[in-house]
Length: 277
Image (cartoon, rainbow, N blue to C red; front, side, top):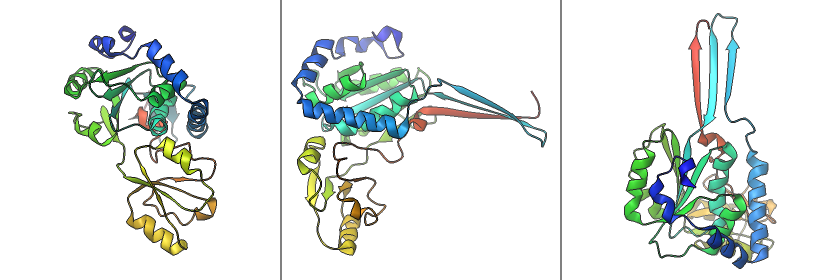
């Protein structure tokens, strides 16, 4: 399977098998799978899928010069999950922009001992997203993977979970950009209309913290807290400060979007400025 990708062959024995994927999918509650599908559909709706693999735009200007702009997906993307990263919904929000950008080779790596089982929700989410390449990799071998990928052209690293980025011995550059999941301890909730049980399932690693009070009190509490997101009625839309990167309204509790992480981050752009062609 890996021989048709840029990833090293030594990862082959570490790949999650089809049987393990299938068993995890069947073990996950149908309602949870439905929310994963909704989360994936939301990514498609918000970002769309590139129908053009690469593009070139040539423009001849009246001022006597020519510009040629080109864009294409990077050759590969590796999504690193630490053992503490157990949210299938937030993982999908990182994975889907890479797939929608048209990156041909995408690998999901869970940094853990080889005998450590994957959370079933994560595998079911990968199955639903069509992401077939997933491995468990001991922390001591992340450097080996990084060394291999350094020889494979332009790529992107996504690091979910606090320890993941610290294990990556990569100097960030235009060739190898790194996105790190912002680290927060809690998710703020206000009002009585959001589904807190759904939020707890979607983010088992975050503490749900209920806030109360008027608009000014709520804004102050959100500004002084350490929140990954705020969940509440749409009446709070203009109350949420910019320091909180995401608000989830009623009916959206099982979805997630990473502010600033879109398919364009997985593209390379180049422009040429010449007098004539």
